[in-house]
Image (cartoon, rainbow, N blue to C red; front, side, top):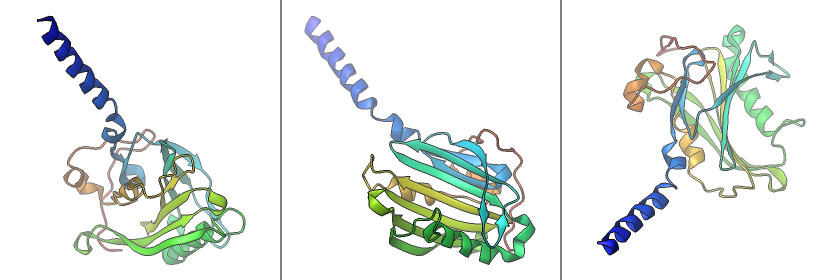
Length: 215
């Protein structure tokens, strides 16, 4: 009997050890910000912060917020800048944001190595597609790898990025793509798309705005 008890205890202990590695994976889930009209998967609850966003040509955004979390030396971040007073300039705002990110002298990834520059899309065409740009770059001097997707929708510029820091070093990690490819703009059917009711990010309003299928 004592041997059987020890065997059961050993199995239980092994299960606990194996289970201890699960939380990082299990923590991934959708989080929503209805007041900024987006939802996305994050590996943990993101923190909202008010910030300042400005570009030389299109000037200071009416307001800007970042939603970010760092897990295992990967920084997951969504930046939302309000340019609702310049909706007609949306295409130009998008292009300047991409330029500022990749080539600006003061804080862009100038001299970094571009690994990918492709069109991205949120939602199929029949459900109000939003088109943008996805850019993957290595920072200069071994500073890490960054993947950022850019969109402009309903007067707001969205920059969703994942930065794999050198301390992590796994630049082939699928978590970058998992993050940026999970973005949703149509929150009216959010539960249908996510399979659940995502928690609202602290600081965000709870009212879901009607989704415009055509701009």
